[in-house]
Length: 128
Image: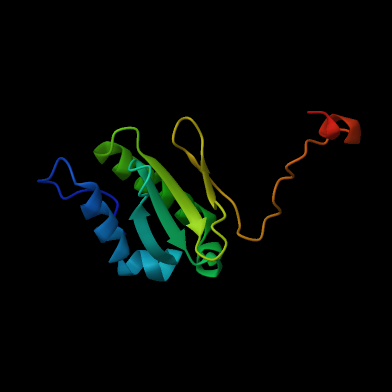
């Protein structure tokens, strides 16, 4: 897996990181990486799309490690870098990072959070 730049290089261009992820056979095989790209409208955002079945089949520890390494590499090379790991079919986020950069992975089949809070009442939702 692409985890860090070569020892001689202190900085990688975003395009190099994206190309490395897109050609990383181990990441494709073991984590289901389908495609990586830098968002056109928000250049500091790296989106890594994965095959959800392969992603879910990989041990959670491995997914956490990969996601944290991707974030660390991206942030080292892109100011205020953000990484999103998403299901290639649904675009649903499969990783959430806390403020410290620690990854929390979810299964692609995990239930989605409701858009309405459990404390909302029908009258609350109707008010402007």
